Amino acid sequence: MIYFDFAATTPLDSEAAEVFVQASTEFFGNSSSLHDIGGQSLDLLENCREELASLFGVNKKGLYFTSGGSEGNFLAIEALLSAPKQAGKHIIAGMAEHSSIHGVLNRLEGYSITYLPLNSYGLIDINELERAITPETVLVTVQHVNSEIGTIQTIEEIARICRENDIHFHSDFVQSFGKIDLKKITPLVSSFSFSGHKIYGPKGIGGVYVDPAISWMPFFPGGSHERGFRPGTVNVPAIASMTAAAQKINDQLVQSHDRFLELRATLIETLDPIREFVHIYQAPLDSQLPSIIGLRISGIEGQWMMLECNRYGFAISTGSACQIGMQAPAKVTQALGVSPQEAKEFIRISFGKTTKREDVVKLGETIVDIVKKFKQ
Image: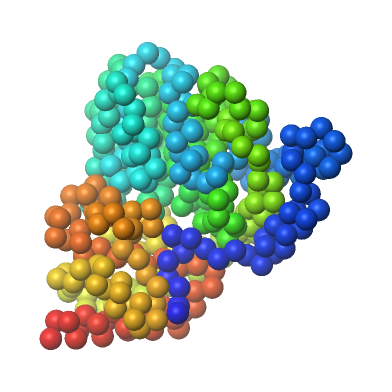
């Protein structure tokens, strides 16, 4: 089986796995315990916090560890709403946000939510965002990179608008962490979330940055871990492993980006014989993560195509893994204004560090053969 679903999750890096085992066996103490063994665990935890803060270019006092991106999004939004810059009950969100963002917004009582669609390039229209702002707007939440088509939102522009209007700005960095240098935009947002398993770290670990200038109130009262941000014993081995994975992937940003550009071009070229049926949802290259390709093939349901590819030994997906099993089309298709029937045709192909050019060619040729047989 050849894997083309790296946007869903990645295999644990071997060096990160070694760090996990070492931390689990040698630094097993509870980082909140006052004895020396707990102190050693605390030292490792704070070293990881410092290293990750340095990679992000943020103050380590604002960095908190969570169980992953979904919990991070939830707690970040709750934290920002507990300390709004001004009175109000209006929130603006991208229509194509991750399901965890929709989940927290759906449970809020007394708030009105404006959802912004995407234009034909998969980007939020900045003018529409500005028109959506009211005197009641207290929060904007827009993901940095869309997990299903890989488009990169203009965080600088959105942050400027929020700053000028005294509005908190949260951004989901789960898909951009480890693929884009984030140092230029991290100081511009009120909060951001990230996850370990998207960067060859372990599952069940991630984090949130909240600007230390914000005096948030904890969602879970009485918690002593992570300075009250969340309860539960801190998973120091997973944090250490994620940090090792982050250091490694951060050193390879430029090379990886260039390689993914070549792989993307290769796949698109290989699909050329069926180009009349293929519709790729993408932005201009400077606003596009090259490792994610979201597309549909006219007349063929995405789930059937995914199962056919699986039968031929290729693992692709029909969108965010958090939506699989819900029998609902990818949220991005709704945001793009795609018809319900066309939305069912959506598939996602994503590359990773083990993806080879010859495997991309094989996948493309297999899709071409499947489509030709189907159309006949």
